[in-house]
Image (spheres, rainbow, N blue to C red):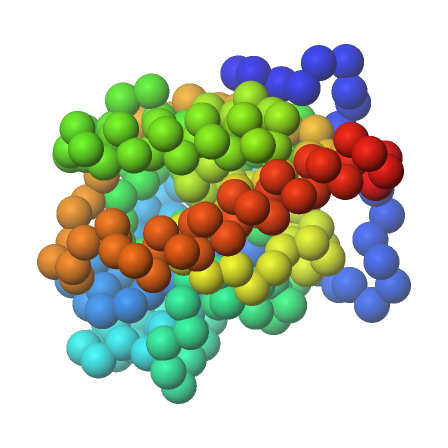
Length: 258
């Protein structure tokens, strides 16, 4: 693991008035047309949580799916009444970053983590992240090897990470993994960024605010979905906007100290 040097975690930081932390952990599971994979995702979470001694809830968000995703989730809840799963249905597709922030406000956990609904994270990797709770303010996963990802996608991912590090002034191995946060940090600092840049925006913002972090190497695999290429103009524009905001914040820290 890599940690920020000589900076203790702020895990005892008091929560703002009105923020309820009735549970240890909230898992946010976003779904868009995942009827074939969501059951596997929930079963993986259930198996992982059997190894981690903490109280938790799972909030599954059906983000405007046009398949049977919601019905499959409801059936899972009926057949697994011992697992604390709640389903929220967005009336239209709001996107991952919007649902990520909205769900933080619906949650009750002290900690908060995104778990993708397409069942690409092994149980062991999930357990490894959860066992690092309390070691720092942010638990950041990265993947030394990621089977299934093309050479082009690996190059673009590495370039993106390098740009965020360069513009933000940090040395993070990977920004687009499913990091674990204090939930009230997400409520306070996350923005409604569109596209793939919202996690880099949140992580660099929290680091700007003095948060500590630990990086945890994980195993996983990349799933290519038949939904068109993510390398499109809309995502390039949103990512470019995120990079500009990260750089502006660094300039502000440099010249104004805040």
